[in-house]
Amino acid sequence: MAYLMMEKNRAKRNELLAAKIIKGLESRNMTGYHVHTAKEALEKALELIPEGGSVTHGGSASIAEIGLVKAIQKGNYNYIDRYAAPDKHAAELEAYDADVYLGSTNAITDDGILVNIDGNSNRVSAYAYGPKKVVLIVGMNKVTSDVDSALKRARNEAAVINVQRFGIDTPCAKTGSCMDCKSPDTICCQFLITRYSRHAGRIHVILVDEPLGF
Ligand code: SF4
Image (cartoon, rainbow, N blue to C red):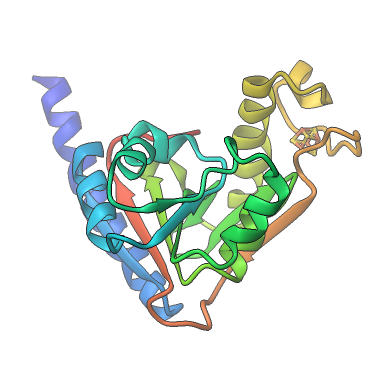
């Protein structure tokens, strides 16, 4: 009973918070949506991706978790697969001309600012410029109150889990928190703060109640 009440309160909180984020996104020339489940997130994402178009993505656990990568691979799309491409760099360059680029964000503020960090930086550069449409799947677990806390989340949570996931030898892999390293293997080379989109209709953010990514 107490659990059900807690979940009801969480749902109410998410409704209110998502409405605030969506309003913030709109004020920044971006578009937001709020769904409850991974299944609904997949349906909404597929609505936004025109069949026959070229689609690719950066590294993102969230898009895999909702089944979006598999759906694109199986569907009627021109899927640019940089992992399978003989020339990965060429595939990453091709992504800048894609119809749709998929991904998530390392953090989002409650007024709609996106914060991302990247090592190779193909992902943040494509978010910033190139693909005609960017569709981001974002669990409500990634919402923070301001840019400072978003950067802290990106560095102390997302980045640390990522280096552990890929077995990268950085100080945070041993300490569990960011040590502000300049290791050759650092995945924190470029920081992208998206506070406004020059192009209306380009960036779409699907907020999901189910926790996704990290
Ligand atoms: S220790 Fe280095 S790689 Fe790890 S989060 Fe900090 S800057 Fe990034």
